[in-house]
Structure formats: structure tokens, C-alpha cells
Image 1 (cartoon, rainbow, N blue to C red):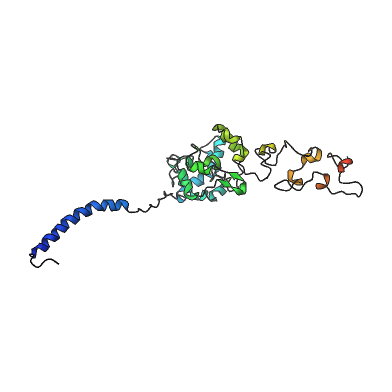
Image 2: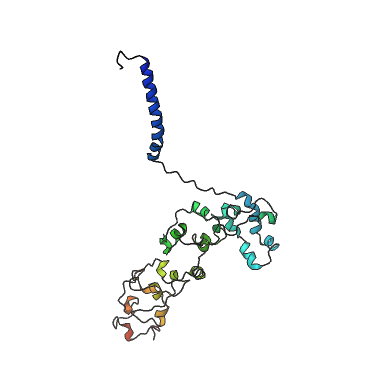
Length: 293
């Protein structure tokens, strides 16, 4: 309330003064308030994968037909590389369509036009498109007892390595993950040697998760000698000399899987005595060359 002796127009002056003071104050405080306000984290926008199975029909008709390919390819090795088994077209990756990953021009029988802009290995150029679907990339695959370098690859720590280096052409019948093709360890070794990655080749456990509890005393290569088949072994140490028929048996014909327990290293561990005389020391009469010797 204003004093009674003040003129009525004084109210107008006070209002104007307050407006003149408030407006600049608001202009000064508004940016500061905006800066202090919590900002929501924007949702990442995933890149769009162009689904191009229908325009890939002409690609499929040619690349699944060896006779058609022979009209343009004379080298048998190149013919084998370009030919796609019809069954692979219906695989998970095959159903995406050729152009989805390899680009090029669809819907044409003109060979030159169809191959314009073609990408031989999509993972060299569009690796992020693989991770649109394959987002949960494990560093360990317990079922296969393998360690994988996925984290290093995704975060760019392993430069120059692409999905196809390990997984091959997954839409072309080569898919070690699904089990359609077993990728020999020699593939890994050849790649590591070509890239001069010698350190990674020194320890089996860098890639393999051993199933045995003897790992503290033995390394994998004390027993395992093959990079193709794990049951090919040559033991560096063994309590019993493995000669004769003993040398031809699998480890777990005698030992308990996976930890080699349950043996006293006497004949009766594995052999049942067919007669009543004698004792458990079969070696008094028999040799590992055969029970009749």
C-alpha cells in the first residue's frame, strides 16, 4: 500500500522501474540457469542398414550357376571363389541379400553395371554394420573354450583386423561360429605370422581355456602337439611309460575327464583280471605289447 499523500501516477513509475530492473536481470540469469540445468543424454542413433534382398535376385541367379560364371571366368580358383552354393543363399547372412553388404547395382543383367561400386570385403569398409546385429561380442566362448579379442577390435586396439579375418565370408558357406565350417587353428596361426604377431603365439592359454586342473603344473604344449586336433598328444611327462598298446589309447580311456583323477597307476585301474591267481601287478606276466605276451 502506498502512502495516501502520494500521487496515483507514482504506481506507474514504480511498475516501470521494476520492469526495467527485472528484464535485464532475467536476460543475465537465463543463460546461467540453462548452463546449470541437468541435460539429458541424447539417445544414439544407429546407422541404417539398407535391406536389399529383392534387388539381389540377379546376383544370386548368376553366382549360384557355375555354367553362367564360366562364361566370364576362366580361372578355376576364381570360379570357386565366386560360386555360391544355393543352400548358402538361405543362411542367416545370405538372406540379407548380396547388395546389402557388397553394394553394387541390383536389378540388372548387365555385368559391368551390376558390379559398379562393388565391395569385395564389406568388413573392410562397413564393419560397423556387422555390429548392428552382433552387439554382444563376448571375450570368452565357454562352449568352445576359446578366448576372443572382440573388445580389442571393437575399441580399435587391434588395428587392421576385420571381422572377415576370423569369420571369413559368412554368407558364402564359411561360418565357424555356427559350426557349418570348422576353422582350423592353422588359419589363426597363418594370420598371426603374416601380421608378425609372434607374442600371441607363445602361450596356448592366450586363446584357449583349458578344461584341466593340471594347468598349474603343465602347459598345454607339454601334451598337445597338433594345431588341428587336440587329441593328438605327445606327453613330456607321464608316471607310466606309454609303449605298446598303451601308446595307442586316448588319455581319457584311462583317466577321468577332465582332471585326470581316479588312477593309482596299476594295471587294475583299467584292466579286469580274468583269472583268480596272481595279484594286481599284472606286469609280473604281461607286457604292454599285448596280454598274450
